[in-house]
Each structure stands twice: as C-alpha cells, then as structure tokens.
Length: 333
Image (cartoon, rainbow, N blue to C red; front, side, top):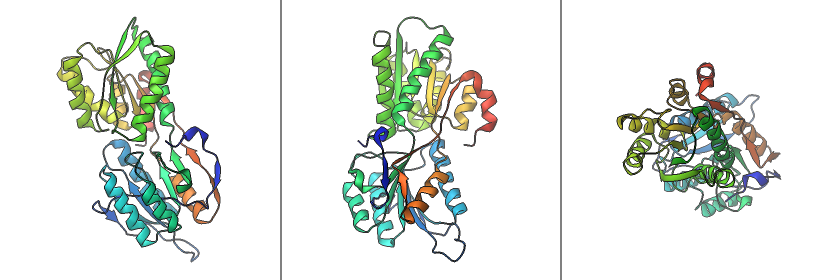
C-alpha cells in the first residue's frame, strides 16, 4: 500500500487516474464558467458512494468548491462498487477530461485503468483514500492519515477509561469499515499499534467485524456482538455512522451507551456530536471531509503543469464528551 508518511514533493508531469461508475449516476452539467475567456477546466470526479453523513459532506464540499472555482464537474457515484468506478474512469478518459480525481472503494485493482489514464496523459488525484499501486500512476493524495487516526483513537480511549474510572481488563469490540478500504485497514492498524505497544496485558479485542461504514451495518453487527460477548466494555467504531447504529443495538439490549459500554468513533459528523452531547459517545477522532477547496487548488496546479505535494493532509482535532456541546454549533457537516 502507498506509504502516506513517506510522500515527497513530486512533479505533476506524472499522470494517473481513477473514477466512478458507468452504471452509477453521472452529472455532466457545468458547475461554473471560467473568467477571462480561458478554457474551463473539466474535472472527472468519482465518489465512492453515499454510505454515511461524512461521505455526503465530502461530496457537497467537492461540488461546491468546483462551482466556486468555475470548473466543469463530471460527477459519478460508484455506489460502493469498484467496477462502477473503473467504468466511470474509463468514461472520463473517453471524454478527455483535464484531470481525474477519485476516492477509491478499495485499495487494490487499479493498475490497469490508471495506466490507461496515464497513456491518455490525464493526471489523476486520489482523494480521501490511498491505493496499492505504482506511485507513478497518480499525482497526489488529498486526505487524512488513517493510521494516525487509529493511534489517536487508542490514545483518546486511554483518557475515556481514566475518566470513567475503569480498572483492570478492557474488552473491546471493533466495528470495521468496508473490507479492503484504506480507512478500515489503516485505522485498525494504528489502533492495534498502540494497543500492542502499551496495553498488551490489559486490552483485548474480543470481537471485530465490518459494518461497511453504514448505520444499519453498525446496528446489525453490534447486536450480534452483544449476543456473543455480553460483557463488552468498549466499542471502537471506524466511523460515526456505525457507532450511531451500534447505539441503537446497545439500547435495545437494555444497556446505556457511553456508560455501560464506552464508545470511541472516528469522523466528527454533526449527528455524532449530538450523540456525544447526550452522553452516548465518549470521544470522537475527527476526520475532515471538507476536501473540496484543497482538491481544486491541486487540480489547478496540475492542469497548469506545476508541482504539488504528494500528500496534502487535512487539519483535524480530537474531542472528548465534555467538549461536545460547545463544539456542536461550529460543526459544518
């Protein structure tokens, strides 16, 4: 997998690609017009899907930023299917867009279509998620450090346990993201790094399964967890939506989320902050979806033949339960 921490500044002369779906919805209408009579930049953007509040905010950010920049946006929703993204990318190549950007469903299986984009001399920018591929096939990644988010989740769990006065062994259930997706792989990796290094004797993951980043998936899987492991102490959910679904299952089982089972999630969507302000989530590790403005800057630079950083990271914070009410009015997604 692409090593995010070792990204270096690179020339944008290398092209790459990715995109969304042929059978998915595509919107080819212009989002704006360029000033000064210069050629309008056409951006083909392939979104992974609309599985969560985070993803909706991410899509809205890209669309509004493209409109603000005066770019023509060709948008496609892959509905969480890689074959849809590959078809959409090929459609973007056939349309001869200026730049392709995409948030990949999974990390593998992109080499062939990225090489097609490179042959067509269309630069590709990854957004949000990384891929396992030849790094010469794409220009840059705009997104978060998911491994570090996993580490941050483990470190903030230490604070949550201390505040709750929990002593002794900690039984942890983990709701994983979509199988094969970069955030699922890397968040689990980062969390385990801290757990193995600092809590080998007192923390144990007793159940771990994908909830596919959805609220319904989180509810269903958490209900099964509680059947097989009724004495779970902590839930670590790879995103807020799965955590919110899990809260429903916890309450249905007659337990109090945030008290009987301590909950740490990742993302920071408004619904997550509402649940945290109600005492149902104990801490949230922020993953910022508002990547649109940064992406448009990269697209402009790439189109003009400039250079960009290989990894443009987003700025993020962590929040404890006692910060939720004050932070809630400022949440933009």
